[in-house]
Image 1 (cartoon, rainbow over the protein chains, first blue to last red):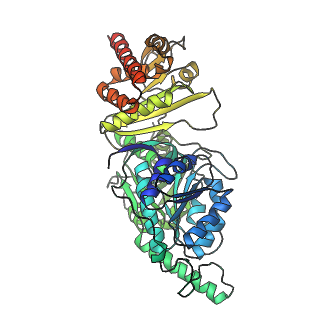
Image 2: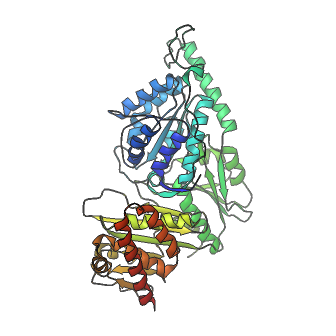
Image 3: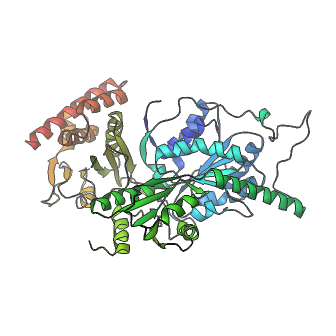
Length: 357
Length: 183
């Protein structure tokens, strides 16, 4: 299909339609309101469902209901809105229901600000709501990647019957880049063909879709079922991208989303100055590409693994855990909506290597 | 190293700043280049400043955030004050001299004064000031082909024949002036 120039938010909306998910419930919030703005006219064109709910909590419950009845559903929001949806995410994880959430992150905590941030890493990758569960977390670094990931997100959600979350920062939502969609859009689900969907039990045995288990043995069984699922996901679905990784790298930077692109520019410019730095960009944040990071980070030539984030230091805790003390770990971050420049990343690298400007 | 060009368009809300940037991005994309368009977004007020950055490159674009762009087209004084000092050494600065009566006072870059609002009024519609600036910028940098931009305008405005004519005139005026200035 021909290339189109689209804002990340609009492209995410179109990608969901391409994925055969014309069921959208949402509540507007900056910096992702353009998704709703786009879908409010686009969804009627494909006979889709658009409901602007009265709150994010209501959005969550609508998702639960529609997903349980076999519909392919999704929503988009930004940090404070995603916090309000955590109850549903936990319930849907417990009930083994597929759904895709998009979090176009802004600065927090609380109402925070409206500019780009990556401070919801813990919330997204460590469960977010209550209970023993995880969700799959994908982190695009360009508009095209956001589109490709939306298609993949629905596959993953249905393959593992789990909530999947795509996290982008405000920059991914707001910028326009060229993007291509698949030639053939997918068909919507047919709930009658889904073996667990609640479609009315006339003529068949009743199905149950719930997260409430008052019998402790049953709840334990469900929890271990979930744990098994996450093991499988960790084994099969890790993704990462390497950039400028070479034998003469002294530092390897780990960074995701927009921040990774800023690091990429810093790395190009440092290369011009004779300083060799590699980039390890996790594409899936859960499952984190742990083995891959350990393999790259523990190479002989690497002196330090540097985690660069738009937060005060969240992913770096995973990096420390994964590297098991094998190498020095360092961190650089800005937050609250401040997006670091390539120059700041370069300064940090020079400081670690004790190179004078 | 691959060629990359960055330009900031900045002015008041309503001067067609975002449109000028988007036209450039669309056209460069049609020419097969990598492009990225980023608006300033944040708590803004009516009548406040607006700006966008367009990156055009031969290869995959790294940082979408450009702290020191190669060039800028500034449409009002607050924008000159904000971006005048940020442009890279040996860069290019186009100033809307219809509304700005000072220069950047930098001697390490190329600066041109273009009265785009005055020219727009002459052409017949004050709203095409942005197109005049864009045409001048393209003529000076060769970042995209002039013909491609004209085709893009035709595509976008195809049904509005009267607007199309005025935009064509704006393109020609911008180009003519740029040729004269660069000489």
